[in-house]
Image (cartoon, rainbow, N blue to C red; front, side, top):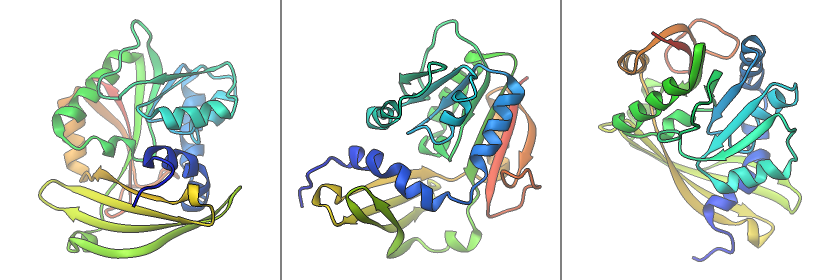
Amino acid sequence: MTYAVPYARLIARHYDALNAVLRGGSQDAAFYLALARESGGPVLELGCGTGRILLPIAQEGIPCVGLDASRDMLDVLRSKRPPPSLELVHAAMESFDLGARRFALITIPFRAFSHLLEVPTQLAALACIRRHLAPGGRLALDVFDPKLASLARAEEPEALAVTAATPRGRLERHDRVSRDAARQVLTLRMRFVAEAPEDCGEGELQLRWFHRYELEHLLARAGFTIEALYGGFDRRPWAPGGETVVVARPG
């Protein structure tokens, strides 16, 4: 079937409406805002998307750069008329180069690091981050630790994941999940059903899952020391099967 709007643009268009439902109770925005305040800036966010995390930071006057590989996501963020304290850059997190600029805080929120599926790409991103951190600067990121029971299921049937309201009417996202345990890669196939034909479409994304000590080893190999490891954005102790939130420094 051919759809009126390309999948990447469709994802960007509906990102805020869907995440208002999916992440409505999350404390991640407050967590990253607190870190930004502590740092004083400047702040670089990798995978900034439509600005859900970064805009509140920039609105406090903290100098920020938002970087994303999706032009469609950046276009949505620009449409929100961000403050002058926020600069946007179209680049990939594993290969960006901002010259001599250095940052007190670099963040990778909302599991964006999991879009890097292979170890060489992950290490390349961490090397870029190290080069762009100011002395004493910190890296903060979050990924998900998979529930062991879910790993036993290679495939899950399509199911309604979320319903949201858009300016053009009701929108549903139906998800089908498959897991490649050998590669530690989750494939999420999404189908959008909407009242407006231009809001319908389908596509997929892949996410690499990380186990705790795998992530610790990866950061150490890239030259980082973990300063804090949490199991949630309320800074609770880490536990299996939930969020893995890391704050690290070079060294």
